[in-house]
Every structure is written in structure tokens, then in C-alpha cells.
Image 1: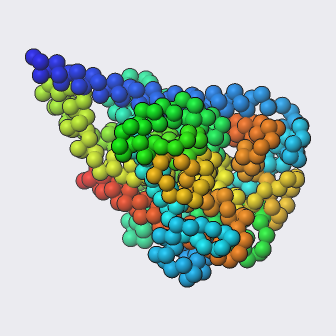
Image 2: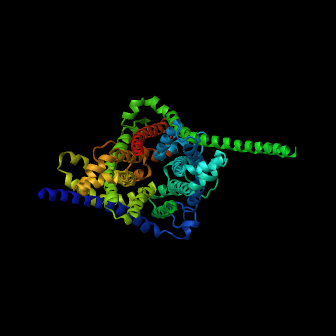
Image 3: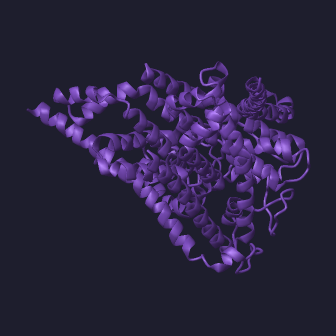
Length: 278
Length: 327
């Protein structure tokens, strides 16, 4: 009987630890979000969205130029990365599903998916900044595109794999060429999942900082010129948070709140979209 | 006559239409193929451009001289990677040491204990931790977590372990707040969702029959987990941990905020240190001189190779599991 009690006690203790682990994970999320809202919300006002970043030590000012810069670079990065990612995912799932090359590409894509983003930033610096001699928003966008590609490849491939083969066979039996089968049947069936992938990719790159540090650098002023240095929200948060000026630190918190809200809204939206289909 | 006429016209236009479709088909196929090759090109390009950029540093200091060199001095242009490599590996290792048991615990909670209706929301909440950008962890770590550790946790650690032989070295010094331990803890939070979600996914592959038979023999929940679930999913869980390690090794912004950026190898976990990624993030734009820049790129190359190996190992393990599942 004592052996039985002992076993039971052991089980209860370990399961309590598991409850504790879950509670710990959830409370960390709550604490981080609470800190963000507490510190960031008091800085939110109209100026944040309409004014330029202020010079050091002065009050007022906002985050307009980094917000615009982030939108531009994320937009261009996603615009470059998404088509390449979708086409590559299509190759892996449709044309080369079982080929040896696909296995290699799939494997390397998974590695690229978790590769350190700072290394991607240095790579972009080496090919797009060093030869030209100056930092540019375009280089920033390219480094983000490189981060978008593996995410989109992965989700596109997975979603196309879920499309049942009889659908393709039926279309082919009607005499449809392969490319039309893919575009009109497979893409249609996998649409929601593919959009989810793109949304997740946007969520991932819009908070990226490391690759932008050596590609787009930063810019005190408003700029929509893609071939010049460009401000971005994450880079400005990095600069302002580590500065000694209280006003800058406040703006950094506000920027952090904006980014987190945007990113979490995107990823929750993506999940809602994918769960509606299944 | 008339009938044959229309049919030849038909075949001709039909052939034309088919040709056009064929052309589109070929173009589309080749486009997808080229895009797939882009993935290879990017990875190859990263490797080649980093090797090219790192070459001057390796030539100057020698490969092993660079890796084992302890000095990092921009004035005398003497660079060695020991301190950042040490910081990277120790910080990631401690992060994994903390995140692995917690992550597996959460996965057990999600698959065995949690009421069905709560599984999805709790799972999503944990995954949201992965969605929070790394810079947010950085600013949170610097302004909230590090001061918290400095005031409440670190003095207690110093006091508790002050007279214990080995641990007193690990927890010696002044509580700065920022340092190796703080970076490790932040990293642990950041990799937690990756480990949790993979562990949960592989736990769910355990055939219910196996668990039910164990329960049927009177096993407790812990015994089922310990003797059925964990042995069945061992490869997957280890793969997930390696994936988390790969993430931790390359993590940049969060670490840059809280590690203190000191090029020193010190035994105390409370002391400021640096990692490869933090060094690059801090110094690259300000680096003057070819050797300085090249040394930073050489650091990036080392980081890339380490993460490549860790991530490959992780993928191999997860792939093996997938094959097992398919068979």
C-alpha cells in the first residue's frame, strides 16, 4: 500500500510541476505584455503618428519616419520574397515532390528558416552595401526578403501537400495543362493556408532589427528614397532605448508597443484564418 | 469536303492553342524550378560571401589563433574570438538547460492534463511568445527584468551560494543586473515556445493505444509519461531542443541589450560578457579598418557554421521521426 501511495505522490508532484511550468509560461507572456502596455500606452498620442523623431534631449516628436520606413521596407521585402517563396514551394510540392534535389532544398530551407538573422544582414551588407558604398532602404528590404522566402516556401509546400491528389487528377483528365492545374485547382484549394504563411512572414520580418542595422542603417529624417539610408521602427527602438534621454526611451517603449500590437494582431489573424478552413 | 475543311481549321487552331499552353506550362515550370534554386543560391551565397569577407582576418591571425585568441582590441587591431564564442555557447546552453524542462513540462500539461477546451488557447498563448519580436525582449529585459534580477534575485544567489565551493565562483561578484545570467534567462524565455510546440507535436504522435494500455495496467500519469511517451518521442524531443539551441545561438537583439558587452571570459555568470551576435550588432557599423571589419565577418562565419551544424542535427532527428511516423 505504501508503494502505491509513493507512486501516486510522485505522479502528483511531477504533474504539479507541469501545471507550474504552464503557469510560468503564461505569466511570462502576461508580464511582458503588461509591461509593454504600462510603459508604452502613456506615450501614445497623435504626435507619435504625425511627427518626426525628435533630436536628442528635446520633448515632443513622434515616430512617423520610422513607421513609414518600416512599412516601405517590409512592403518591398514581402513583395520580393513572397513570389519567389510561393514558386519555390510550388516546385517542392508539385514538380519535384520526390526528387533528390527537393529533399536537399527542403532541408536547407529549414536551416535558412532558423538561421541567425544577423548573418543574413551581414550577407546583404556584403553584396548590396559594401560594393555601392552606402546604406540603403533597398538593401534593408532585400535582407527582409531573404527572411521571408523560407517561411513562405515552407507554408506553401505544406499547404499544397494537403491538397488531395484526385482534385489534380480530375483537372488533368479534362486536359488541363499542369501549370493551369496548379494555378486554378491546387492554389485555389490551398489559398487560405498560403495567405496564412505570408501573414506569418510579414509578422516575422516586421519586428526584425538585426538585419536592418547594417543595411538600411537609420535616418533621423523622413525619407521615402529606397536608395538612401532609411529609418525603421526596430532600429529606432534599439537606438532610443539605449540612449540616456528619457524622452527617447519613452518613444522607444511606445514604438515597442506599436510593433508588438501589429505583430501579434497579424499572427492571431493568420491563425484565425487557418483555423476557419480546417 | 466542307466537313474536312472545318476539321483541319479546328486542328490547326487547336494545335496553336495547345502550343501556347505548352509554352506557358514550360515557363511556369522553369520559374518554379529557378525559385527553388534561389534557396540554394542564398545559402551558398551567404557561405561564400562570409568566407570571402573573413579571409583577411584568418590570414592575419590564423584560423585557430583567431578562434582561441582572447584579446579584442580595436586600437592595436588584435582580434580573437574566444570571449564571444564562450559567451554564445554558455548563454545558449544555460538557456536550454532552463527552457527544456519547462517546455517539456508545458507540453505534458497540454497533452495530458489540460482540459480539451483550454488546449488551443493555452497553446496559442505560448506560441505568441515566439511571435514577440526579439527587440521587445531586449527592451523589456533591460528596463524591467534586469533591474528585477539585480534587486531581488542576484543578491540572494550571491548570499546563498557564497560558501558553496563551485557555485560561489559561478555566482561571485557584484549584482550588475545585466550579464551572462540575465541574457541566458531571456534566451530561455525566447526558445521556450519552440521547444514546447515541437514537444507537444511529437507527444501527440504517440498512439493512444500505447498510453491506454499503460493506464490500464494501473500506471500513474507520470509513469505513462516517463515510460511510454518520452521513450517513444525521444528523438523528436531532442530534435526540438536542438532547434531551440540553434535559435538561441543566433539570437541577437535581446542579448545585445542585456549581456553587458564585455570582451572577457569570466567564471562568474553575473559578470557582463558578450556573444558573437551582440558583438557584431554593436560594433559592425562603427568598425574602422579592414581587419576589424573582417574579424567581425569571421565571427559571423563561425556563428553560421555552429548554427548550421546544430540545426542540421535537429532536422535529421526530426526527419527520422517523420519517416518512422510514415512507416
